[in-house]
Length: 285
Ligand SMILES: [Fe+2]
Image (cartoon, rainbow, N blue to C red; front, side):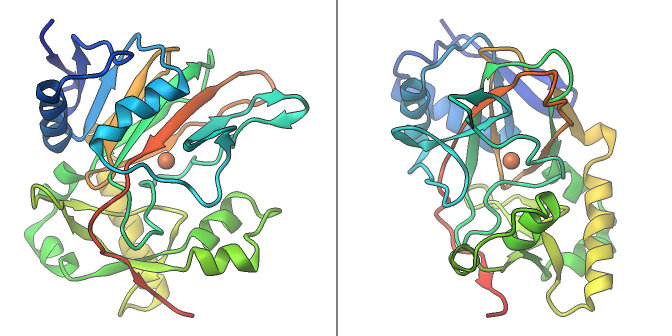
């Protein structure tokens, strides 16, 4: 079987067919997928029904896998984050409606994570979609003077602020705040492998821009996010069980759409590849 790529929509992402991800992939196929993620940033595989072990085995060749300090795990599999509204044995199995604002994963890290891999186990009939924006095209289409203005700017990413805005009743503990300090990340983020620049942003996670008054920095970021998430750069994925989406966090933004947690069931498993490049400076104390 050969690997075939078909656009998800013109200019945004690719669907990949011709691979069974339950089986170990060959070094040749691995190289094709690594090149594809660098080129297209967003990949979809359908009809892959993976166990957590198989998902970890598929993810591992792309790099060391991240162990999240805060999010829920599948018991015994620390590499897997569960995104779900389901209750098992009286306990939530994962985090629900936790990613409704545009973001990219792991921007709070000194070495931001590179690739995220999200696999659908249980799909809702309505809502709970994931939208992806190609922020490389967004950067490329900015006016030249805007690119020049932002090229040396850094945005301040605050996981504590994100938590406070997303779950005001569950602020981070002081210990977790110390473990996840605010970090400044380049707004025009050069890809560590290709050098291609992309907008590297978020909505609720960003406090301001280094060297700018807070309100001006926040407004600059908001206007860049509006530009990056206009329809022509965005693909919206309606999940089916067995879907696997893989994206490059250095070249995309994503968010979930609202899920009615009382009426719909959703369970997704995420693995995340650690970054290798230090970009985030600690801000504040
Ligand atoms: Fe995310």
